Image 1 (cartoon, rainbow, N blue to C red):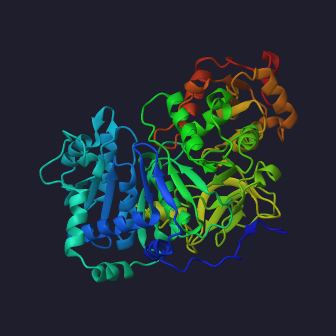
Image 2 (image 1 turned 90 degrees about the horizontal axis):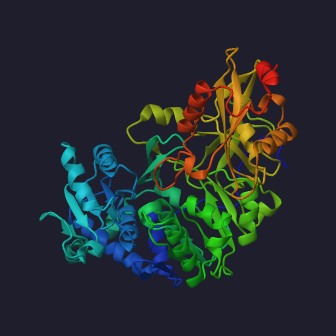
Image 3 (image 1 turned 180 degrees about the horizontal axis):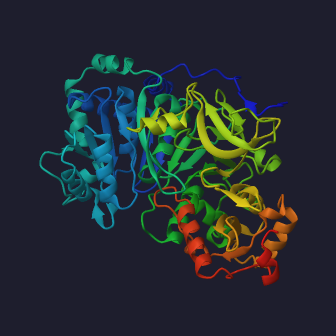
Length: 576
């Protein structure tokens, strides 16, 4: 049992192969697994997927692309982005994931300007009723120094009548045909042999809880984890590459070694919520999905609204995977009732799903996100960088081959995030128990240290307790300046579970009973409906804490007595 908060599982050997070697070995193994895209429907065995990817790789070589070049994907879905990722990673070409953040033109301009891709793959997904091809033309024209030499449109776009494209664009089919014709197997093998294990592999955009965008460079080792912790799903459901390409990329690697089929859910787009949820549930029923991960917003809806699940046979489902958000204890309990081996994965783009609970461990440790993956070092440190005893809160640091390489063109940010000896500072307030299980309380950056009655109060510490209330769905703690001092007052922002009947008085009484100190009790409680809360844009929408903090500050400034939970006599003394 641990005494200090340091954990390192070395029971399993590191994967000895490069990513190109992993792709090839899995194809030669040919366990008969397949990938199914639900809509538009495609089904392809993993060996065929690899063979087509090698045709694309030859095509990229025929275009003159080489190791260290970059290819960006805009608006492509189905098998083509997956095939392109396999092709690029086999040659040491850095691949840039699909991203559908708004405003599209502004984001495309930023990607084209910062990434400077040699080539792009364009798809047929409409965005704001405008094809991605039109967005791309406008965006690329606005970046005068771009490095794009090749524009390729995918095979779905090829089949569309009237698809808007320039005369010098190439179809993916023609690129593949040219590669097969001009590039030998020996030349392809020579190019693949030059790729290293920590080869730069993929750029991904990450938007944190503030909505700030980071361009993160990952290596092939990120996707070469030998996963020994998650339950062995026979059929894993995933979101389309149009919204969660990094997840699909990782599972394409992993599924080749665990005899797993993949089912890729339809792209949601801007359709009605219930329609999207119904399509997800229908796919789970039709393809007998055993485990699934998708946009956390829709997972919340599936778990919290029983009416959405009515009429669907979900008996095959044993695991729902949550990631990217801290969820309440009550939500985990509801999730486990639907799928008893559900897990909560902790990670970020910088350390992609490097911590995960084993199937069934939520039943024993429902508030934990699990242990770090094998060969990942984890430690919890205090403000001086010293490792704290177990069950003491501090910042989580991680080290291992799976971590990101750098923030693109931001050496100062990279240096600030990593120590000289390779530890990544996650910025998360956590604790570790005697068995190495981690408990996440929130972002330290989001947890401004409010000064209350001469002491320091962490908002994320309060929020971790609030989330244990069965009727609290979402919570945030906002500090506002007190009228009579230079210190702060604590305000709770609460979204209740629908139809729970939760009242501010219930929350006040809960706080008085459960909080560590009366300094964590609320002065005000603001009740919000879900649609009233601000969220960040992007495929992984998160509560926009900065915007919500500003809202509360404005409301308190306008009317300090709004939503007080104490009478005026008590309020006038605040925490005295």
